[in-house]
Image 1 (spheres, helix red, strand yellow):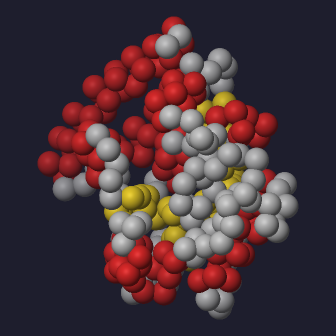
Image 2 (image 1 turned 90 degrees about the horizontal axis):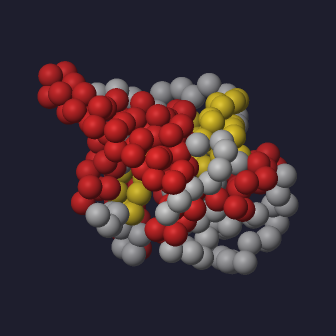
Amino acid sequence: MNARAARRIAGLFLLFGVMGPLHVVTKLLLGRSLWPPRFLAAAAWIVGARVRLDGAAIHSHALLVSNHVSWLDILVLSGATNCAFVSKDALGHPFIHWLADQNATVYVKRAHVKGAKDQAIAIAKALEGSKPVALFPEGTTGPGTHLLPFRPTLLEAANFAAKDVAIYPVVLDYGRAAAEIAWWHEPGKLNVLKLLGRPGNLPVTVHVLEPLDRSGDRKQLASQAREAIGQRLGLTSADHSPIGGEK
């Protein structure tokens, strides 16, 4: 660990020491708290991300469909849009799970294929609330040089919601640094320390694209979202991923 990473880790602990109690007290007194997205935005800044939000205005009851490059995406995207996330149910350390709970994370069991409808219904209920819900349809972080296949299953959530849900493709654009910061075929601890020890700032633009046409089925929606995100990133859209097929 270099000195820069150590300073950033100290900054993150200090941030939590200040905002954590404020969040807990606010939630106890008011029943809700606006501190989680503020915490995530500040954490992204401490890590070095300099975030710019660009594009369409996000309305209530929105499903955000985004490319996925790094664990940093969580800090960047929620800090910029106040979104909750769809996540696998096993997040490892209990403290990480607690942090995810504070931001209204929706948990799904990826291995539970037969429960896909139940998972979509759980996401639909979250979409009926006041926060946008973000989904990474690649299912994992990619290499930053191309998009992995988009899994369409959970996009069905928009059809189960009692509200009129808009589906927005969202582009996380790290520019030339995408391949450098991507969490791809390396241990998580190594990637975290690499990003924390990275010199300089990391410009990242969150592009919110126009909502998708909801007339298609979930596979068409996934294809449209992947096409739109690929075009904005300047990537070819056809079968450029080393991982084929969908689940």
